[in-house]
Image (cartoon, rainbow, N blue to C red; front, side):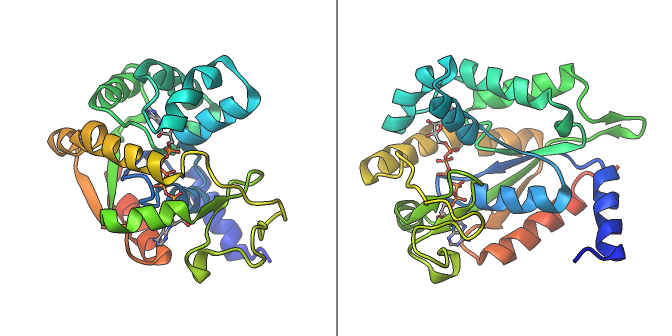
Length: 245
Ligand code: AP5
């Protein structure tokens, strides 16, 4: 039931400038899980390049056709294609107060493009100053990631993420979404051989971003192996404290 207080909180969040937030972390770190929670709390959109690409594949678009083979092999899609998709998404009015970037940027080239794009398009410039990018890195030991990814199941309708290996994150009825009753699916790239390739590519192509952001922004490190609620609280705190205007 919506109370006067919760209505008040929603209005407060809707009026608030949150700014751009980047969630960094290896495949299976919990970026998607946390992005969904954070977006609900701050009432801002999740911009997940993986989800946008999968949606393009499902709809058979030209973007989807160009990306599919790369994704099924666990390779990155070209910077140019992903940047075009992100530019389109950030131009939508719901991104005006802020957004969570989940899975983007993923190369130093993409990070440089993003800095330039936000500056050139005057994102989050106010009379008090400019909201800078807040970078949050979820750290998880590699030994945990394989189990998380092979156990992941996703609802194709609402996008909710489950895991068959932990009772806490399992669905109430096996294989069925708690929210809308849809049959849960396994992502095509959650096969062990593809996961290994994705983890390798993360090391070589995405990890250098941590150094890039350490030079240009403050990187906040959060233990991604903690309980999901603990991580959410830490991310909320980081956003609340980050770059106040
Ligand atoms: P993308 O969809 O972005 O995948 P990813 O980065 O590999 O990350 P995942 O979605 O696998 O993991 P996650 O960190 O979101 O974890 P989740 O919350 O689901 O990209 C897919 C592909 O698209 C790429 O390989 C590439 O080809 C292409 N692509 C995308 N962006 C691109 C870009 N910018 N440039 C070029 N190519 C791009 O959690 C995983 C599991 O763990 C779940 O089952 C969950 O329930 C469980 N879990 C989550 N948190 C916890 C916790 N705290 N404790 C225990 N279990 C947990």
